[in-house]
Length: 222
Image 1 (cartoon, rainbow, N blue to C red):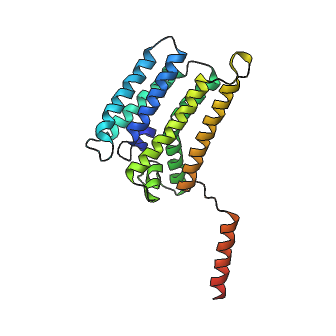
Image 2: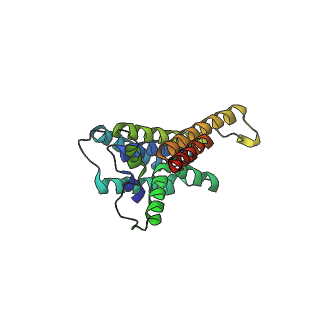
Image 3: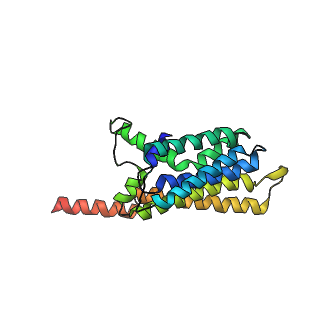
């Protein structure tokens, strides 16, 4: 619940991510369970979030607020436990983690930063991923659409895990394995791009380090 609430920092961000997550849960729940109720609830969340997004996307005319974000987080968590998790243990863990990876990563990153700087966990700051996008010069629309793309690739990986099993019925499936590999590479590429752009992990090339050392030597000699 709080992860979705923390994510609700830009117009349309939480609603869009929850809509993508809900439609993914709906498809997975339909394929796993004979009971259609989890899929129906997921479809309701998807429709509600999509209808709300029409008025909430930048520039927003209405806002979700804490009550809406907490409700979406609660319902998605309930769907994960009720519908998606009733399968094999490994797959059960993978589906929600992939589909809800963005709010999970955002909250984990923010909490780690606040602990590192000695701040209360619930204090306000600009450590969130969407704030870092804005600090890097992205517009609100660009930041939200980039996070939509990231969420969609992660949701695609979850769907591929379910519907494109590479080792179905005890035999390796060539095309399924190839498709899973391509989707996995796409997820890694988008995730690496986000990490690089937001400088979550600062990576500098040897050439850049040599230039910095040369500049420092010039300053000292001057």
